[in-house]
Each structure stands twice: as C-alpha cells, then as structure tokens.
Amino acid sequence: MGLIQNIIDKKMQSFSENLQRREYLKAFWQFYCAVNLSESYLKIKEEENKEITRIRNSLWRRWCNYEGKENPKILKRFQKLINRDMKVVMTATHKLQKEKDDAEIEEGQGIFKQGDIGITGFEFPA
Amino acid sequence: MKKTKEKLPNLSILAQQMVLKKLGMFCSERQSIDFYYLIEAINIIISDRGEDWVGEICKKNGKDWRGIKEKLEKVNRLVNITKTFYDPIQDKRFERKDTDKNLSDTQSYFRRYVMKTRRRISLMQRDLYDLLFFLIENTSLKLKTIPSQNFFILENQKVLDPRKDKRHDRLVKEEEK
Image: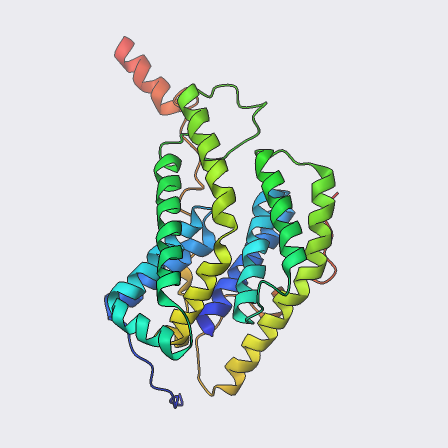
C-alpha cells in the first residue's frame, strides 16, 4: 500500500512540476502513468473504458509523431481527458489512504503532505 | 508499532533493496526509459521468489502465468532494444527538430528509433502495472516504502559541450604556450 502510494504520489508531483515548467510532453506522460497505475490498482478492466483508452492512445501516438512539437489542438484534447481521469487518481489515493488507516500499521512518512495531492482547479499556464 | 495479522513471504534483503532502488528510478526517469527500471524490478522479484512460486500464486488467483510470461518477454525485448538505442544518443533532451541543426545521420536515426518504439511500449504499460501490483500484494513489499534518496533523476543532466567549457579553453591555451 505504502509502496503503491509512493509511486502514484511521485508521478503526480512530477506532473505538476513539469506543467509549471511548461514541459507538456513530460507532464502528460507522468499523468498517463499515474492514471494507468490507479486503474490497475482499482482493478478497472480495460474493456470498460475501451473508447476512452482508444482516444487516449491515438492522441499519444500523434503526439509522439510530432517529436516534441506542441500542437495546441492536441493539448486541448489532452486537457479534457485529464479533467476526466483526475477522478480515477483521486479515488485510488483515497482508497489507499483508507487502507493504510485501517491496517493498523505504522509506516514512515510519505514524501508529500496530504495537501499536495488534489489538483482540482489546475490551469495550464498562459 | 502494532504487528500485522498477515504473513507474507519475504524477499531477500538484497533483492528488497534492489527492487526499491529500481522503483525509485522508475518514478523519476523520463518516458519509455522508466519501464526499463520497472521491468528490472519485476524480474528481480520473480527470480528471487522463483517462477514456480509465481505460477502457484497465479493459479490460486485464476490467472494464466504462461500468457503473462509471453507478454513480459515481449516487453523485455522492446525495452532492451530502446535502451541500446537510447544510450548512445548524445543530447538526451530531445529538443525540437528545427532548432537542433547539429545532428548527424546516426544520431537522428537513433532518435527516430527511440521515438518509434516508445509509442509501442506506452500502450503496454497496463499489463506491466497489473503484474507489478499482483507481485507486491503477495510479498512483504506491500508494507515497505521507497526511501526518498532513491528518487533521483539519472540522465537529466546537461551534455558537456567542449566549445562552451572554460576548462577546455584554458587547456588549449596552456598547450599553445
């Protein structure tokens, strides 16, 4: 539980750091990893989210073809997907925290405080 | 500190340290190279506990170990190939093509190959994560955390350009004298 929480927390931290630095490719990659991690932790089957994974994968293929050039149209589409996928990450982190509290184990401190996670009103920098 | 009621099988101490280090690198590395470290962590867990143990646990949980093994071998091959092409790339920043005019043919070929394979790897990550979590939940790694010193970025350093390096200029002047 602690290990999985560490990994997801670190991915979300690097997502927010790269967004601030306007390195969108790196930021979306980290977020994409965090979403897949939380989906596999929550055991969401791939068949349930078939359409969205197809859209996300096709966007990702197109992005990689541009070799790092930022296309504002694709950026907007990614932004919509992020708004939807953030809920998945939040449910996974809440479930992890609940399991940690219920397990009656004392673990070391996490790398972040609780307030760092929960980017609900984020915006892309201008 | 209260003890847990579950009794989970332990990895050896060396394997635990290696796995936590690799997972730290996985968290902090850049795209498609981070899977190299994730796969190394998975391989260490499987070789420490043994394939028979993994097969037994898959049977108990209704999973097909043969199918998982085939996918793992496929991803292993892809990731190792990208790593061999990624290592000789001089400028790992992957800047835009227009501004980067000093690329030789071989360097641009390596770059294109890495871009091509990372697309394929990114689509297979879900299988890897399922396997990783399955292994973690059935070992004592479930109760561990990654120490913060393992989160460091290895290859995000600037490439030394001898034309801009002042030490190089000083050495050249001393030789001329």
